[in-house]
Amino acid sequence: MHPHAPTLTPGAYVDPARSAPAGRQRGWGRFTLMTRSFILLVATSGVAAGVLWMKKETPNPAGAVATREAPLVEARSLKPLLETANAAKLAPYAAKMSSARSQEAVSSPQPKEKDASHAMTQWPREVVLRGTPQVHSVSQDAKSGEYVYQTEHFEFSCDIALGVDVVRHFAHVFEATHLLNCQLPLDLKPAPESLRKLYRARILSKDADYTALRKAPGGGGFYSSRDKCMYVPASSLGVKIAGERVLLDQSIESNSTLIHEITHQMMNRWVSLLPLWLLEGSAEYVASADFVHGRFSLGQMEDRLKQRLRSLGAQRKDNASVRCNMLNVAELLKLNHKTWSAGMPSPAGHENYTSALLLTYYLYHLDRGREGAGIIAMLRAVGEGMPHEDALRQFILAGRKPAELEGEIGMAFARMGVELKFTRRGGAVFEP
Ligand SMILES: [Zn+2]
Image 1 (cartoon, protein in one colour):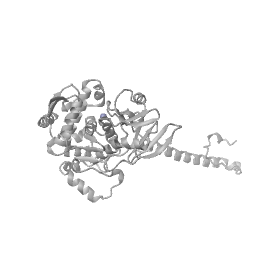
Image 2 (cartoon, rainbow, N blue to C red):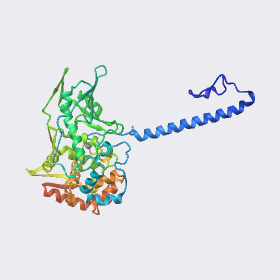
Image 3 (spheres, rainbow, N blue to C red):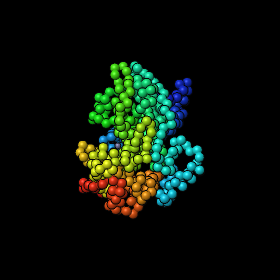
Image 4 (cartoon, rainbow, N blue to C red):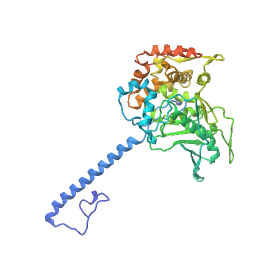
């Protein structure tokens, strides 16, 4: 046996016919040692590069599950959403959003699909799916109990055969919510999670399986940023299973929880970049919109906001006005996942959603009369790499103290029939 045989790498080549003379044995040995060292160095570099690539492209496996009732906690490491990070260039953006957008459209008429923006420059009054979603049955494996269907932007898997007609029925809400999030002037540029071409949704035929997965009853679905997947009980999609038959139940009145969660999935790459009030507020905003037969109507958002506030516990004052509590702005801006989750079993949980929705709505439509210019500028800056707290100071507060912003919020909502009482919990406050 060759003296170095035990340390040979499996791929190392040894020519058995070539036995070196005794005098050259040491020189040959040194050459072999150097060759092996070189191979080892190349292999180690390769492995290190592989590990770095994997770290970059895969999500943190320790991430927490995000649910409708517990906020999004974790997301994969993100590449900047936009190409450059230049805060100085962003300052005029708030005032010139429309012209900047149209210039972009002129300078890059054919953007890459990945970075393509389908955002509108004006706030849409209606977002409608064109035609019926096309559904393809990708696999039907009765043995493993895995049935997979695809639409343009989603892949649905289920433990029973649903059939393309049933999938087409609930695909409306998924595809329409995707379209709405693409078209909002926020310029979110929704995209499937890293390494995915389609958003994934797992449909669970048995409510018990869903409850076990979610570790709590109720809820119409939840998005897990760890699994990069939506989990939805078939029952909340209007799908009834009667023995071997799969039926459609058209009596589902509201898809709002599902739309809230799909919006979290659409915003997956923003999860680690944005404050909690905005992640939850933006999902609540979309969930507030009127959605019927694949059509979102945003023309009556004031009324829809009041309806949503009532469903979250607001009191009705009269037909046109409501009264509710809102967490004071300084604490709301600083609200973290721990405090949010801790509030869940109590009325503070509803107050969190109410407060996040109110602040988000205010910034989308009411702040400084500029149809979301401040929040759009903040999102753009964050997308370019600015920490969200800095972007908040620069583009939202813009010299105002949280208490001043709170005063403006109170007056703006009072004018539209939403009477706010600001609450204090004594938590951490945002330092302007
Ligand atoms: Zn949420």
